[in-house]
Amino acid sequence: MEIKVKLFAALRKGRFDCEIRDYASGATVSQILSKLNIPENKVSIIFINGRHADLNHELYNNDTVAFFPPIGGG
Amino acid sequence: MDKLHDYLLSNAKDDLLPWTVQVDAAKQFGMTCRMIEEAVLQMGLLPVRYQRNRQTISTNQQLRLFRSKVAVIGCGGLGGYIIEELARLGIGQIVIVDPDVFVEHNLNRQILSSISSLGRSKVEVAEERITKINPVVKVTPVMNALTEKNGKKLLQGMNVAVDALDSIQARLELSEVCKDLGIPLVHGGVAGWYGQVATQFPEDDILKKIYARCKDGNGIESDYGNLSFTPGVVASIESAEVCKILLDQGSYLRHSMLSINLLDMEIVKVQLS
Image (cartoon, rainbow over all chains, first blue to last red):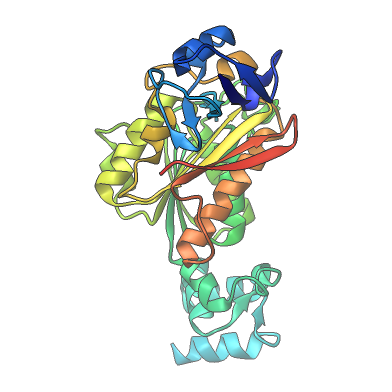
């Protein structure tokens, strides 16, 4: 299935900002992060089609998933 | 009081009152410059320092800012700029909370840090700076960390609290205190080229949503550090949010988060409701 993956802030480093990528049917957010080599603790906000989601969320063809890292400095 | 009014009116240029007149009035009438400033604004006169505010902020709104109380939690990269901007804006009372002293690695970004301030309390240096800029601002420096225990006492009566902290856990504690006290909280965070801002009203849960997955962990600032310009950008947006909340104007970053990427010059607003 085709999933649009959007990466924000430092998650883009060495990767991309937005790409349509192929994943096995039924893939979860957690599996997508693993394929992208992004540790789960480097992601604080997950959106699927503009709605808040969590790691176990299953994706469907043509979904858009977006990841933001935790930013906590001052 | 009539004598004071007459004095101020006769020394005003149009409706503007120079600082020297405020100082003279305070001496003559045995009052503080702060009391004089309130009287000036109540009369519809404007201290000259706010002359460039007036096309955007009316004299009445300037009085509202003067009567406002804002707490800035954290006095480092973000806090230094926020305190500077709020004092220049004319916020009447500012509470500053930070347990730390300035150290050498603060010098790359923290506007209040300097060679001569190394080893000195951040809140004490901030108080001195505010007094130099705008002596009528009442500053309450608190050299302590804000916790859920002492938070209620420190933030009681504030109109807005501003998050200028450097820890996710401390931010979540601040959020809980603000929610309990019914205080709006303006959140900001920075890391390397990146930053974010959001505004939480007491009935909202934005900070929990932002940090739900990393309550006890660090942000990416532990990998990317903090640069000189990112705190200035994020702090200024936080100050603008404070100003709008106090004046009940414009649209806030409520139920949403502004994500700022200065490396790609991309600013996006995402809905978090």
